[in-house]
Image 1 (tube, rainbow, N blue to C red):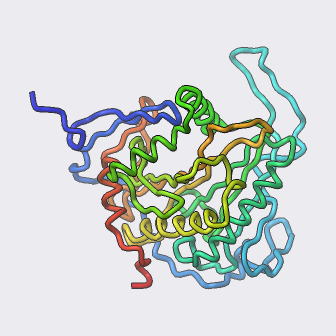
Image 2: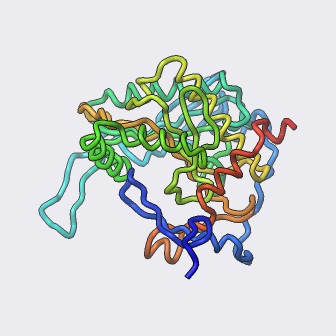
Image 3: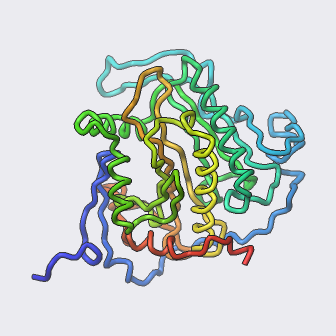
Length: 348
């Protein structure tokens, strides 16, 4: 029998943050594709769209008018998934039919008044203003005693369910800690109690030493493809310094975070020379009033594209019934991203 080769043979990889596994099948990346092909989104958008409910000065669906904002702008989502005044109720008596009411506040974060921009096309100074607004909202929402977790995220592209192309993200804050952060809370705590170090500090040190999955880095952050990545070009930005939330950033770290956010997303756009779709979000400590010294700040990017701008990775069949599976190895994905230029393809 031939010797096992992690770059060629099927294997499973463990995610210590979520206590889950992913099946990696590198040999399958050679198979021909005859499945669904998405339409490539090479649209040209105007700087201002009078029909866009997020553009500066326009009227939204609920009749409220946006101010003539010139940088960033936030407002409570007109169609919030969570409501501030939800009556409190939960049923844990019935083991098979448990439920718990959820209250919360959902915000929309406009990154720029420019309708035609995305993060990789913005200047670092403009992205820094987005970071500042995230900090402000996290502080306000997290300071509410009814809010125990604040989830900052961005859905980019129609393929990721984004209903408006204007550059924007969202913040959902709620009374309970959602299950993905809850899993990370548990596993980071377990690791910290065992080693007296943060899980991601040790992981990041090992990744920097190996340099196999690092994509871009600066003095304060590293963007890499996690060893346990599920999505083909999944990445994670991890802070070099161990801190818990966006409130803990120094001025230098805020600028560095904005810079690496831009550099990484330029790599994404350059991969298939298209406005690269993804869902991305910051995972940081809960706002439940408790001390979480083990939590290590990071931001996750989950892009769906597989082989080209028109071929999407589907989570079906085995992934739904067994566990996630990927064909491209994390090392191969990182190498492709790392070798891409850092000048946006539209500016060549």
